[in-house]
Image (cartoon, rainbow, N blue to C red):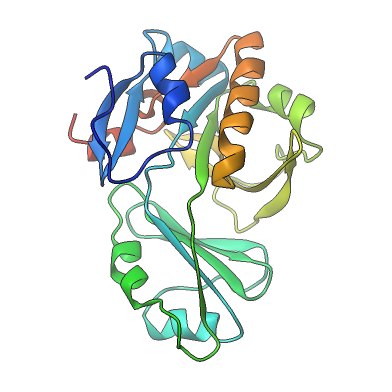
Length: 230
């Protein structure tokens, strides 16, 4: 499929990927770019920029948010600016002390279970709409991309360690964690929906200068590719 089907949800960088003639597959109500070009594998090994905005997520904040999540059986990070893994490749991220981002991985179901329960009127809990642009950066030259875009050195951060960083990348506020994908460290990024196209285009442009570029999930995150059924 060379163009996305009519979506229930839409990625903030969908039109940019359409312009690059990405190949698409449906994933939970959003078209997912499974490949961008025949060079995806090579680009991903150098420095690949992959859109994973189709992963489902939700948010909440407030003085009672941590206790409420625990009451729903959701594991909560112990400290501020930390994250923990969920079954199926998902995460729970603690942004400061009282705000949480929950995101399902390729085969996760926690967001679908918890999201309908988060509503106004729960004491100490406020729902937070999450329409993030979510990206993955892969490849051995990611540190060189970061030198040009961000003032944080992530090379010493353990992959799948608990650390979460709130910083800026090319002037865009981002949340960043370091994860292991395909047996190699990769960066997960989240930013505001409206800032997503600018961040994506800028990162892709720099990645292309470094021998990489935009890639689909088949190269960057095979588990997510498998979840599309293609």
